Amino acid sequence: MSTTAATATATVARTISPTRMFFRTSRTIPSMAHARSVFKQLGEYGEMIEYKFLRCPETQQYLKYGFVIYKDQQGAQNAATQQFIKVTSNLFDKPCDIKIEKSNYNSNNYNSN
View: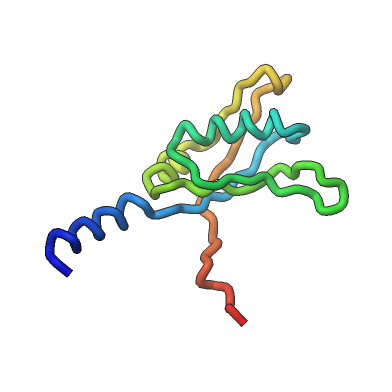
């Protein structure tokens, strides 16, 4: 591999390093519209490639936590530096606080049996 190609590959690897973050909300998320407003606020810190609220398996209601995967580490660090992220939307009667932290999830932890 040429030096230029190796440098370009290393640059791309540094700029695209997906980082998974876990979050919790202070309020119940009753609808998809409420969930979108939370993700819109989290998207202010960096480009997201995946995001999800977890649901109760029996009721299918949103739980107060989920995860977001930022495209790069910088977006994740931007979000994590905030103590609490506030979502102010007409959908919520009071502002919703989000606590976000780095997830311990690592795809290499799973066996491929």
